[in-house]
Length: 368
Image (tube, rainbow, N blue to C red; front, side):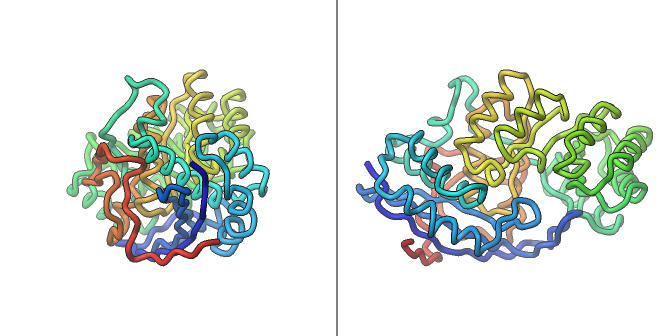
């Protein structure tokens, strides 16, 4: 079975409420979809969000990467030889991780469909690690304190018991945000704090210690400092009691290896848009497993197709102990049929081949 065609299309999905972090504000999902078609007529689907402030990928760069470099390099290749396919994709163009991720997950979707099994079963390192039910957190955007408190209370009322609280807009104000949320939701809720690179080294240490002293009871702090500041990340990790999760600092297998070897963070957030897809994410999982470093499966602002690819990865690998896969829950609608079922904080994986989606009828695909 060989790759016959690669096609692209676009989606626009409004969010329920604007998404705000220390880096950006977004009110809709505007992503490129990829369809890979085999010479037998089977199709696989992937998705790429343009997240310029994090990955550097724009709508124009994603399309150009797929159209002009990745697709010409992969057409005609044997889908039974995934290693050669992903090697060719890496050689076709440097970086452009979101474009690569979209094609990567479409190929994995197609490969699992050709075997007649769900993708999570194909990706499983050890069958006993497979889970068909996952729990995700939900994001609380950074806003004025009262609004964040109200959003947190509503999230708990809606059945989410793990809240990912966005901060990074000011040390003492951030402490107030988290302290007030803890008071409002009570001791049972799990609070994860995400600074999105918003603090300096000194501000990070000071702010996290203030949260600890205030009894905020936070599970972890995600990416407290700049993605390039590995020394600062390690300094913060060593200076506080709260576990530190590396996110934007981990774009590659090499980044993950450095984080683990230098003990620059306690935990690693794996996002397919940073790793360039499932192929490299699996390598990070193996490395983390060997070192005993637990991982989170995360996502950008993505719709159900690409988030579900990450869901399959998380379901297949036990080293992924946390999920931040709330993208579909933030969308005002779901234009797709099939795939995992999102019910509040729970994600259920059905026994459908591949990632599990039918071709989206609302999307016009164009061969590239």
